[in-house]
Image (cartoon, rainbow, N blue to C red; front, side, top):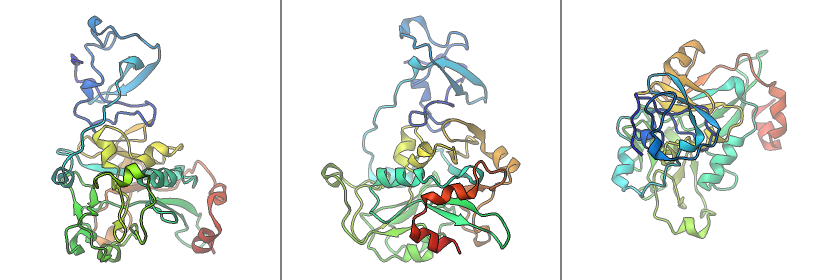
Length: 321
């Protein structure tokens, strides 16, 4: 489909799974083309209109509406080489924002991540902690992922270059190189890595695939696993699984170069959001420069107690006194 638009492309307020993230695809014009705001497509396109309107955010920050019939699914991309996986996506600088005021400890993020990455039973790449900063202060729920630090200590201690930092900001693990020394686990101050002690429990078709750093599949016994920011999804212009699975919009993901983050239903200017909501990073004094930012748990949508029912007995004993 040709695009005759006035730079009006990209997306907002689409379904979470099908949402085309602002700035993640330079080729969004292939999915959404426009000539003007009232009649965004040429007559020869001959597309049957659905009558359902979808709001999109242009790169100029304007909200436009088009018929949903003009949105095309992004096709599966061919498998890329290991060297391309290690380079990352040119011109991108991925970032995540976690809004603690919205978290109810539903753990949908955790279950979606575990399911899509076939995480070993009993392990989690996303952990949701019950936090209380000091005596007599209000407790809150804190989802914790790999921080994808700009100064990652895990990368510095890896003796075989299995853990590496990409040009787009994502930190990944190459399990074909990992020797299971666990130096990276010891170096990570956020305790977000897990060790695969046993053989992975994956379907046969997954087990027979060539290993991919971007999908982290198939996992291998004797290697380390962690949150990978779902780079295979971002290549297709889709959100990481934790973002699309959360019904409360806790996670926002985007590109710092585009200054935009989204949860699929709402899109914000990253710089404005962090400034206006007093965003912060964990353990800032360590100098790791995380790419995961938190918004403080003020004016919370849910009482802390409403999330206790999703805690198992072991979690309660660890996190609560």
